[in-house]
Image: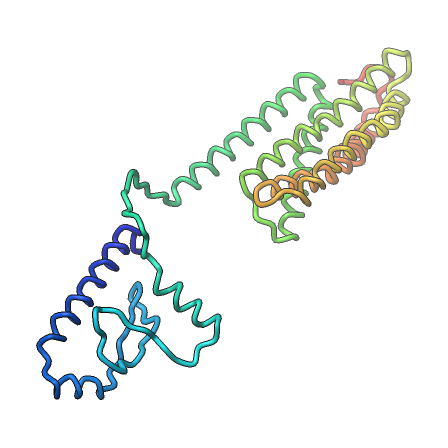
Length: 276
């Protein structure tokens, strides 16, 4: 693609040569030559960026380097041709202050940093859950991993493109999913401190935390919906991944985690002390 300054310079140079050529030829022609030139139907090509945009026939002499193009044009065609003829005719000189070349390396660098941030954030969440809730933290991490896999699966079904805001939405979803597990586990701890046995405390913890989980995720989903309908571009990409993540979080944080815990309870048959 020709830079603007070079295109402007070429246009000015072409105009100057055209005017000089017409003015130099006109005084040297005698009456017969002028008559012969007038009767000769020669095409005059108008070229912009290597493409012929118009090629009218010369009907008569062009005095002073000025002419008029006539023909069976519609109003739209005439306006389009006028815009093309005026292209690059800036009233003021163009001064290049700074010139930069943006290549694919910039986008690749941003993607790599976004992926690194996602990995670091996920690893920190995993370590926190393991240290705080031990075995039940492992259950939560398994549910979060399946949650992220479900998000990618839904995005693939929708043929959606994963952008940097989309990666941010997935990282935020990981935090939301873990927050749901934290609510459940803390509720189980309260039931255990209240004197209930392990199985009863686990069952009560899941049941009583469900209402809080639904309330928090529904309000977040409403905010994501507003971002999707009002926002544009990257904002909508963030809203899509966040909305999908909220739906999968409700399933994995409650149903999937409960299934994993129930399987462990049937296997170990805990009575009072559970690793949470």
